[in-house]
Every structure is written in structure tokens, then in C-alpha cells.
Image 1 (spheres, rainbow, N blue to C red):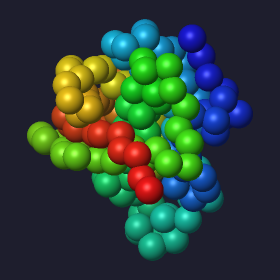
Image 2: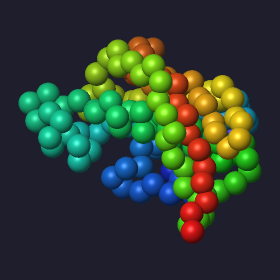
Image 3: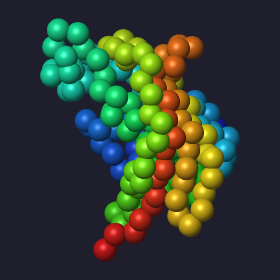
Image 4: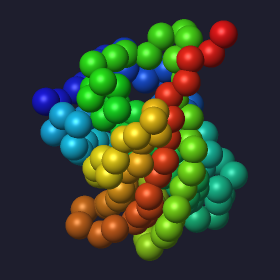
Length: 147
């Protein structure tokens, strides 16, 4: 299954400038997702990170991976978020940054579900530029209903 930006906007509550998934290339329901973030020089964070050598902040690469993980989780559960559902980071383990991500790069977000128990999801995540690993980490996320 693929998702375009219009379908992604229905699945994620994020909006500009923090929506970091542009397209979903494939979802293996309940197992894995492969998505894209097109990195443009027009991203607002490049104004300050760094003006002389623009590099995408590592925390935003992790956020892009978490957003792809959220799409996988919502798809697995057959849910779409509403105004009372939030999807939070619960933990990040083993984050490694192996290559800078620069304007013009296409970030391939690959996330696989490791386990889901008691409302906590654990994912293995990897962001690549071409075949080169840019970032990898284990992510823990949870969905909560708010008042």
C-alpha cells in the first residue's frame, strides 16, 4: 500500500513546519513501513542549522522516523487519530548518526515493528540517503487519549 500526502494528512495530526513524511512507498501491515522525506533548502531549520553548511538536525530525522512509525501503528490498529488521540515518543535507544542529511537529499525512512505490548510500541528504525545509512535507532512510542 502507498500513501500520498493527502492520505498522510488524514493519518497524522502534524502540519507544516513539523510534518516530516512526504510519501509512503509501502506498508507491510503490522510489520514495516517505507516512507520518504524530501529535504529542501526551504526547510525553516536550515536558516540556523547551519547557515554556512546546512544540515538537517538529528532530532528531526528521529521525528521523521517516529512519524512513519505512527502511520504504521495507526494502520495496524485500523485507526486514524482524532482530536483526543496523541502519539508520543516514550524512548529512544541506540541512536546513531552516521551521515549528514543535506538539502536536496531524499531521506528514506524504514521502520519495522519489534513489539507491541500494553499500548507501547517498539520499533527498529533506519533513515537512509540512497543506500547510505544516515541515522538508526530503536524507538518507543505510545498512543494516549487526552481529555
